[in-house]
Every structure is written in structure tokens, then in C-alpha cells.
Image (tube, rainbow, N blue to C red; front, side, top):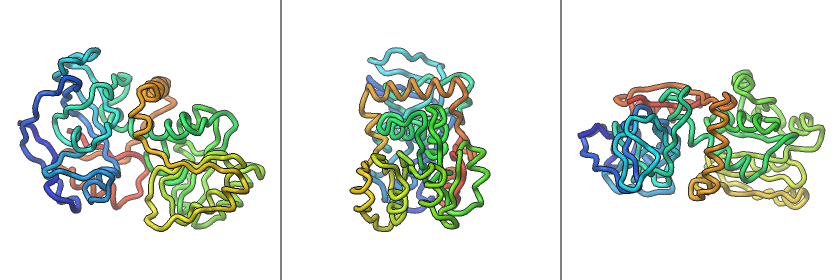
Length: 329
């Protein structure tokens, strides 16, 4: 029996229960890992709250990210051996391959032998953020030398990952935040410029920074009323990648900016990369190289124990922290 976190109903963090569960052997294409650390994501909070793309079948496991030690490998799996340190690129099913607990069976194609210099806590905070940011910025927007990119929700783990990836390819980062209280922290985290949208005019500041050209790329998980000033801040022929809906308010279609600047507005999902073997291989190569060189380094906001999983969720919900929340097992 292993200690596994499950939910038996939707609700607040109190529905997260640690239970003794018999975890089966891995399937032929899976690897079973002894989990040492878990990366906590807002997607899991949304799943728990019944606000996610996937429905639960109770009792349900949950969790996307983990790092740990290889235990048993499935009959068809090659390239992994018992005792190796690995981390997990989040699968496409939050429940089937749930990582919250002492043991997890996960798809072998998404298991990575991460650089040895990474701690388990760091390795558990790598893949969701860097694959998401890489897929949008590099794979789809073709971000490169001389480009300007606006990164909203900049203090999130994906926002911080976007800073580092943009710097790797020679782009300039304009981070947005509501107030100036996080300005220095975001600059320290890698942003070249920070615009406090509640205190400054986003369009005017971006045009000042870009000498009137605007930003070619925008990475946004918010939507809502900010859509219009974001598109007004863009360069002709630019692309905005929308990967979330944090606002909760209606998102107006910025018709005149889109027409006048020939803009591309694209909905983007992390699953576009994970479901494509060739793109996934490109992501792994880029991210592992960045981790090995030190250009990519996950930032951890706070660490909790498995027994405090409810507190970890409450912290993530109630704090606009800079960096990733991690749970150690």
C-alpha cells in the first residue's frame, strides 16, 4: 500500500485526502516511479474545483508533475533502469497518471533523465512551465534575436520560464504586472522591462521601449479586457498566443488592431507539444541543454510536505507568488 492523494468530490482544498492505496504494476508502456517531489499547478486546483477541461471519475487521483526514482518498468519499455533519477513531462490525463502520492505509474515516453545537478524539487518544477513556454515562443511564434515579447501573468512559473527562454534565443522581455510592487523581483528574475498595468499605460510604455514598433509576440494566459491594450501594443504581423482564461471576464475581439496590423491570435495548449513526438523531442533537447548550461533554472516559491498538500493548494490559490510551489514526499 502507498500513500496516495485522491479526491472523492469536487470542492475546496479540504477534499484532498491522503489514503492508503494499492498501486498496480505499470502497464507495458509505463514506468513506475517512487515519487520524491511534486510540482503543483493551477490546473490541479481547477480540476479539484470542477473548473477544468477534464471531468473526474471518483475517487480520482490528480497531479501532472513529479520527480523521483525509477522502480518497475513496463514490459515494452527500454532505456530506463531501476534506481535512476527521472522527472515527468506532464501527460495529457491529469487523473489516469496522477502524481500526487508516494508512487505513480506514468507514460515512459514522457519520462526524462534530467541533468544530475538538479535536485528532485527543481526537477519536479521543470517540465510544465518550460514545455509550455517553449512550445508557444520557440515552436510556434519562432521567437528570436531582436524580437520583443510581452509576457503577462509574469510572476507565474510559465512567465518566469518565458523570460529565460526568450533570453536564450536573444529576445527582449517586457513583463506585465498589476502594480509596481514586484517590479524589482521580475527584473531580478530575468525581465528586461516591467510595466505595471494598473499604474502605467501599457501601449505607451511598450511603444517607448520598442521605439514605436510594438512587440512582435505576446504570451498571455489571462484574456478579458486586457486583450485590447495588448493587441494595440503589438507590431505589424505579430502573434498573440493565448494559453489560459484567468480573467473570467468576457474577452473582446480587438477588430481594428487585428485588421490594421494583420495580427495572428492563436489559442495554444501545452498538449499540442506533448501529443507530437517530433515537437516533444525538440522541446526535450532545448530544455535539457538549457538546464545543463544554467540558462534555464526553475525558481521555487515555497515547498510543502505531502502531509500538507491541502496547505500547498491553499497557498497557490491565495498567493500571487513568484515561482513554483513544490511538495516533497
